Each structure stands twice: as structure tokens, then as C-alpha cells.
Amino acid sequence: MEERLILESIERYIRGEMLPEERKFFEDLRKSNPGIDQMVVEHTVFLNLIEKYGNRKNVKSTLQDVHNELFETGQIKQSKETKVVRLWLKYRKVVAVAASIAGITALAISGLTSYYTPRVPNTRLENLDRKISMLANGQKNIIDKINKTTQVKVPVEPDFKRGGTGFMVDPKGYLVTNAHVIGNSTVVIVQNNKGQEFTAKIVYVSPNSDLAFLKIVDSEFKASTVLPYAISKGNIELGEAIFTLGYPRDEIVYGEGYLSAKTGYSGDTLACQIAIAANPGNSGGPVIDKTGEVIGVLSNKLSQAQGEVFALRSKNIFSALEEMKADTSLATIRPTQVSNVKNLDRVQQIKKIQDFIYLVKSY
Amino acid sequence: MWACMDYFGNRQKLLLSLLHFQLGYDSLLSVLNKAGVTTDSNEQGLLKGLAANDRKAIETIYRVHYSMIQTLVINNNGTSDDARDIFQEAIIVLYEKAKSGSFELHAQLKTYIYAVSRRLWLKKLVQSQRFSGDLANAPETIATEDDVEIYEHRTEDFELMERALLNLGEPCKELLESYYLRKKNMSEIAKEFGYTNADNAKNQKYKCLMRLKKIFFGHYNNSL
Image (cartoon, rainbow over all chains, first blue to last red; front, top):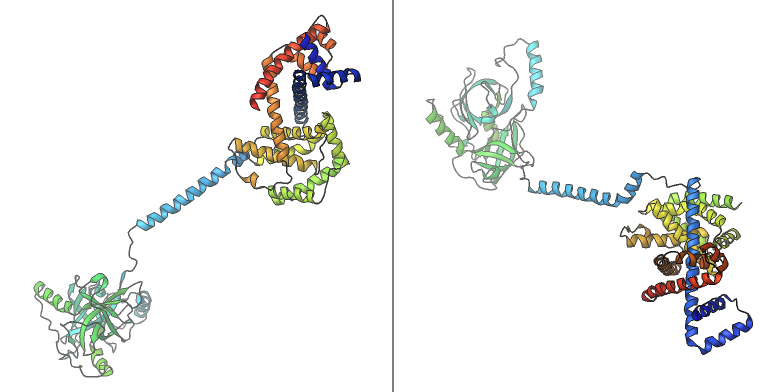
């Protein structure tokens, strides 16, 4: 009872409901009695807190009321964002991260794949036989055939399929050329630098060494007694000056260069590398050194690189001839071994040699 | 007139914020503040109304500013429920400042509400680890850190009192709320609660009050 009265007095005191005299009395009591003073302080704090509690509670309920009312009357609207948009907003970071990871993974995989894939060399050997003029010539020849009834030496088809160069290894009419110039043709026409055409017979094809031997079997052909050049059996030297004669077009073309490596494409010891301008049609042409000795048969070049031309070493001619002897009972071919043009200058050499270089057309 | 002006302002800001998105909005607000745009008399009136828990004033504030906060919260990983909570908390911050009397708003009401909401939402994001970083990069328009800190301190007291009252149970809770919150006098309360006289009611109130204080200060002193 006593304490209740004291507390009620304290409340009245805090609220300022006391009369001045009573207030003075209470303040004196507060000063003299620390217990009461302590109660006053504590109760002030409490009343303050409960007041604030009440106020906030009221405002909260008003706010909630207002919120509900405004929503119901449509004066404020729920954000128009749909669920999808909200999900997107929520997860766009995740999506971005996932997408980047996917992208990086894809790049990494493709990178690794290309890194570990065995490299296919894109430098391939290109045989230097002439197929390019095939179509144009074919058309021309068909028209010619229709127009003229002149008997040409071409048997059935007038358009040749492949073309290359060949040179004589035996004055009796034996020619050597690349096997790929002949391909699997059965009919071969050769043409000399004066434009005369002769029928030739395929004597022997050595696909291993990519060489083929032909014999001119035409009655118009007049065999000569001796060849101006020799076929070399000996070694070759780096840097040796060489030249070639061939038919990249219908006219005989001279080209010169040097021996750049003793082996051919990817270490092929049967061939050698030369630096010379060579074009389709040069295949089968002789590679001749300055003394007039044939040291090789021009055969192919790297398709992607400039000036890397390969020639079969002339030794192959001899080994192919050996093969042929064992295989067939045909007359033997005896390549000349002495050069007649050793001490002549280049122009004179060519003058003598060019008559023995033929354009080979296979059908 | 006021609504008209505000509508015009809103439109302009909306257009600009479309250009600058959120950062632009913030910087626009700060430009407005630097330009010395202070609260006009209408806003002062609104604050007074808010301090008095005037429903009309609260409704006006709600109507004008709610959608801004809703956009802010939803654009930063929140839901519309989050938006409602954040907006109401911001209004309570404003209310308690207005109530204290010493409050002078040096910025537009809009700016203040935006800044407080932004800070509150940022805190909530950090707490729930949904924090994305976008919001923190937005420049702060006006300093509201102290206000928010005071608010949080008071929120602790509020929750403590709420829990203490709940623990108290009926009819003590109702009796004390009638007296201290609804400011009813003791004879009214005696009638309402069926006590024979005011003195009985006072006796009962005293007992309840002592229990509440015991519960409340038990936690209050612990939490201090």
C-alpha cells in the first residue's frame, strides 16, 4: 500500500500534476531519500519508454491501415513487375556468371581441342603436270574436230587429259617422264619444240620411283645418233647451278636456279630440292647442271610454299631401268653417259638440248 | 496545387531517372539538395500531421512517396512485401524525428525518405546476404546514418517492451495499455474491467505495473 502510494506520487510528479507546495515537499523528499530518487529516475525511463512504445505502435497500425486502404482503393499499386521479371532481377547475376562460365568453358575446350589435335600438314606436294589447260584445250579441240576433218594423230579423243615434259634418254626414241604425267592413260602423244607430234608407246611405268619410259613409234620420227647431254650417276652438290627446260605452256620454257637441298620432301633421299621457277607442265623435265649432265627429273613442288621444288635424282632413272629389265623382255635402253655440251655457253647448250625435250600429252 | 507541383516534379524526375537509371536518380536528388531546395510549408504541415499520428497526413505521404521506394526495393532484389516494410520503417524514422520536436528537415521529404529507405534496405540486404553491391555504389544523397542508428536502438526498446507485455499476459496487458497508452483514467478502467471501485483498479494496476517493470528491466538491464 505504502509503495503503491509512493509510485502514484512519482507518476504525478513526473507528469507535473503536483501542486507547487506538494512538489516542493516531494523534491525535498527526493533529495533526502536516495531510494525514492532512484525510483523516480527508473520510473521516468520506464514511462518514457512505454510512451514511445505506444506512439510507435499507434503509428504502425495507422501505417498498416493506410497501406491496406490505399491498396484496396488502388491509389498505390503493386509493382507491375511480373514473376518472370522478378526472377530475372533476382537471378540475373547468376545467369550472367553461368553464361560467362559456359562461354569460357567452350573457348577452353575448343582451344584445347585445337591444341591437341595432331596437325595435318597443309603443305602438300603438288605434282607439276598440266591439267589446267585441259578444259580450254578440250573445248577448242572439239570445235577444231568438228570444223576440220583433217586427220590428226590423235586417235579417238582429241583432248589430252594430262600434260608434262619428257626428255630423251636414248637417241633411238626412248623418253623418260614422270609416271604421274602419264597417269593411267594408254595413249601418249609427244610433241617437240617445233610443234611436230609423234605417237609414243608406254614402255614401262615405275610407280615407285614416279618415272615412266616412252618410245616414239611414229614413222615420221627420225632417230638421231647421239644425245647432247648425259644422264648423271654421280653425286650432287649444294648450291650447284642448274637449269631446266619444259613445257608449262605449248612453247618450250627455260628456267634456272640452284640445288638447295640434297633430299626431297620430308627427307626423301630419292629426290632433291631445287630452287627454280616451276609450273604445272614442268613435270618430267630434266634438271641439268652446267656441264650438261642431267642430275634429276623435275617432279613436284610444295603447294603452299613458293620456290620449293623437288626433282627425282637421276640415279632413279638407272634403277628404274634395272627394274624394267627384270620385268620385261624389251630392248634395253642405254642412257648416254657423256655430255657433248660441256664447254659450250648456256645459249649454245640450250640450242642443242632443246630438240630432245618433248611435250608429253596423255589421253 | 501542391499535388500538382509534385506531380510535375515527379514526372520530370521520372524522365530523368529513365535516362540515368538509379545512379542518375541519386545524383539528381543531390543536385536538388545542393540547389538549396528546402522543405516547403506543405511538407512542414505534413510533418506536423505525422508527428500527431494524423491519418490524413500519413495517407498523403504514403500516396506520394510509396511507389518510389517500391521501385527502389524491387529493383534491388526485394519483393513488394519488403518494400512495404522498408517504407513503413522509414516513415517511423521520420515520425520519431518529427515527434522529438528538434527536427528540422533540410532536404525535401522525398530525398529524406529515399535516403533512409536506401540505408535500411542496404542493411537488410547485408544481413540476409542477398547483397548485390549495386545499391552500395549509389552515392548517398544525405547523411542518415545517425537517424537510422537511433531508430534501430529504439526498435530494440520497442521489441523489448512488446515482449515484456506479451509475457505479462491478460488482463494485466490490457489494463496497463488502457492506462498508459490509451490514457484512460482509473474510474473508466475500473468500470471496463469490472472492478468495484477505482481504488481496487489502482491496486491491480500497481501489481501489474510492478510485474511489467520487473520483466522489462530484467531484460533491459541485460541488454544494456
